[in-house]
Length: 289
Image (cartoon, rainbow, N blue to C red; front, side, top):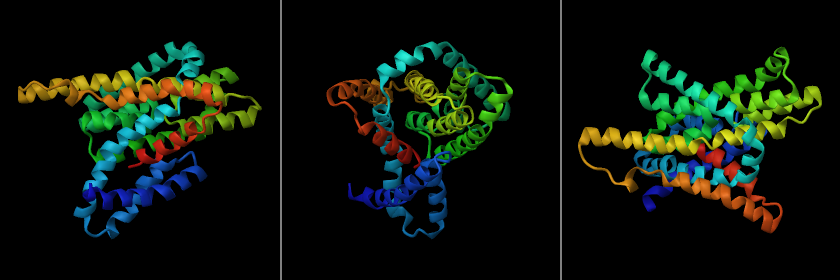
């Protein structure tokens, strides 16, 4: 365990200012600031072999724990109750986005793991989907950082342009909430766009857009399970060895689902569960690594 300490401390030192900056500028978010701070610090680091195990542990195991914490940021009963009306549109947009991503991957010859991360990140829920997918496909740190950076560019564009685009399309308040929740990647950018719309039209689309966005997040579960089976078949074909279920199954996704299920119970028992927002904040900053 001692070998992980230097790298873990470095990640923690970078995570604190990244979290604070993400709070100040939510449209950018903590993960992007974490990447930028890491890039700025890298040339000045000495003894990289000592910090490498801790960084690898953070980018693999702690990334999975961050996805589990994301479950505490969801009230599954509320999402299913209020988000079920948008499910057909969500399913259609996710399917269309994944198909387009696949054809672009084949046409542009993008590296497979980077294409998967970017495709799923842009189709489902940005950084959270990348965090859930990366351990399943065994993506490395560079591929994760590249995918989050691409999603960040989409987030900035969406947060700035969607209110004007919604106006040009003549969308109603309900229509814009559905539009923003299904088309924008990260929750922070959905919040920024919906808040801007509410400021312009004195409406209350923020809650609806957020619920639609959280409903999209549930697609993490079938996608990661499919990718685990795909990777297992591919590795089994190459090695011709039978892989055990425990080696390929992303159990952390089940813990994510369990966390989202027990939250309603905690709310019933204790009223307002403050850990919901805390868990969500932790998730975003851990994803940054």
